[in-house]
Image (cartoon, rainbow, N blue to C red; front, side):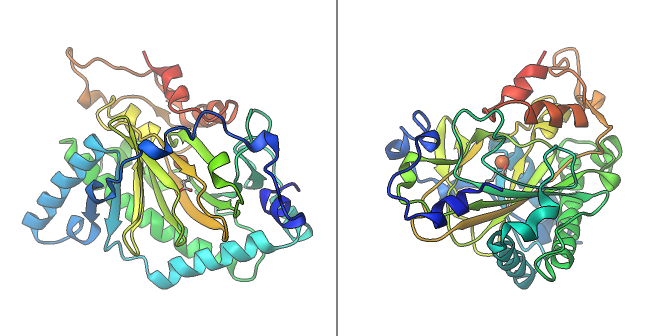
Length: 342
Ligand SMILES: O=C(O)CCC(=O)C(=O)O
Ligand SMILES: [Fe+2]
């Protein structure tokens, strides 16, 4: 199984293979602004607080963050530092395994339960990305590699906790839309919804400015919950500028996905983001869960949010078909959403 990690380790890489060189994505590094401090922070403990004043103020902040940024850092979420650290440690151990021990993970198709690979979709990527990945479908049925020891159990605990957090966030988001608390849950079948775990591994690169980890894209699903090891690289697009994200300690990064954009008829737009490579010495690891409806749910704008002045702006599409659409193309900004825009 080919991986960038192996490429880096197998020879003392003196130059970057030409198929990895990104020509047009990196031009604006110098014009990047450092606005990390402006990225909204949401306190999860306040969202679920019994103090109704605290709760409604935080819900208001959450609505603003979804509308103005599509991105926020989540603090006091209740997922322990120990569990997060263990997920990252075992992820490193997984990528360190010899190929023979990863055989169960070589699924090739989108809906194979466990899939290991490199770049985004090697069959369609014109440029290859400096990234290896492990993807597991973890809900409604849980799948994870059996190696290394304890990985599967740790991941199961982690994704379950992630789902609890997402469930509460989606209730609060329903309220920000003046919908009933369980509206998104009911419309999107959240309780039995699909959850995809994606572990990204960005090996060290001798010339990081020449390559890209993941190009500008949006995520499918309603919300993505992401954490990373100590190395940065994630950038979000805001007001036409790339903003590097330096997460607060022990926070989750949350971004709105394409299906929240569809459901809210564009009120909460999915955020364009990318992962650049900055690490020359160590590997960067990020762990995300994409949380969506059940695969057979047809997602279209919520009727309660539509009016004569605000007609439906997206065609309804089954979640499964949307995933297939995204996987069949190059990752490119909002190209899949554009396809179903009316
Ligand atoms: O590595 C990151 O920070 C971002 C990963 C990402 O955007 C993704 O997996 O969809
Ligand atoms: Fe993403």
